Length: 239
Image (cartoon, rainbow, N blue to C red; front, top):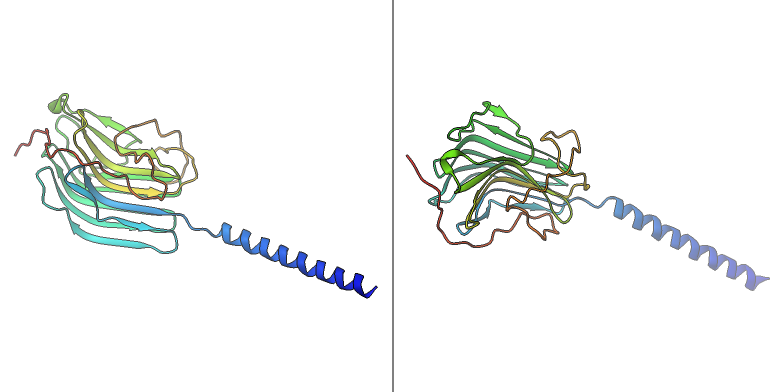
């Protein structure tokens, strides 16, 4: 009887230990934070994504008031970038791309699968915009003055390996040699697809935009990589 009692006690202790381990493991998994990243500007072949901030979800990292490095294609300043627990944001100001696109403010943000873009003072030759507006996801513009040279995408939203990326403004040369991304944020998301530009709904699918900003293999919540390209803008510079 003593041996049976001892065996039963040992079994009870083992079971309790297993249950405790299961509870601890489950709690740890549930508390896992979401990754995110953000940057202000990226120009293929000229400027790597910067200033780039990333977060594993356990803390918030940010930078502010960073001048865009001198280059022949884009000018402006990065007001602020921030990345935290499955949320990120980026804001740029006084942006000019080849004198063909100008904006007072380009701001993006994401929180989980929700993301939005707000643009203030946007000017593109031949186009009319409200002073401040939130464009629909993957709004594509091909200005008449640029002909078959370039395409502009506002509020570009693309799915990454484990979430979503939102880019405020993307300018692509149609020959694929150059790409400019202004204000970018990436969050883990929940697979809900692109929304309508607001932060309060899951919305529809991301529209399949290929905008060039899709990172293809982003599995760590980081920004899209920019492949080096010849430093030949091809965009007409005026003024």
